[in-house]
Image (cartoon, rainbow, N blue to C red; front, side):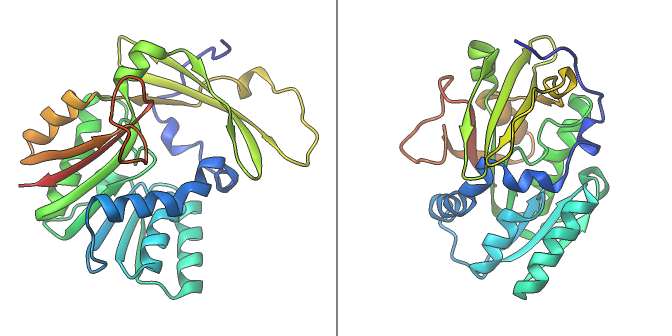
Length: 259
């Protein structure tokens, strides 16, 4: 395996660009929203907060379906793009460029989302990472709903290191995953080959880890939420309601509700 070093503790502030729009998993946005609306039994009237919204793909898809959505992300380029797309479609959205630790909402939203990690586990240590869970709980109204899809710590413990091909319409992504057992963090790096372009041999630094993410098990999330007056309603192994969460599945999807 080729990953050689851990990225800096503040990697999450530096690595993002709009090249991510060509990633294969972006193509699943509509299906993911279909899943969320179905599982959470959303009516279309809910006010939704999308944390670490990226360039707004989930927020914009929800707004197209009539939801009122607020998206927050730390990357200026992403927020600019999300605002551009939303303005073009005259959608009911608001996009805020901020570190999640620097915003606060109190009982304002019917639904909070952390999609494609939603920055869960991205921060420098456990104390900082728990601030995102505080934000989730504080932002929700009573009986408000939360959904996140993250990587599963139990899978990482049992199946990392691993590589995985991901073939989309525009490119082939070749991700690589390692496990930092001591800190319970996933080291992730990816090299992509765009279709129609001549492939070049990657540099060593292109094959090294570009992110370090604290992963959680179902039990850990359950304990974190319990102390914040939230309960887990259901879990899944991917965006298929017939696939249960387990160590066999790399994804962990958690649907929770505030008491």
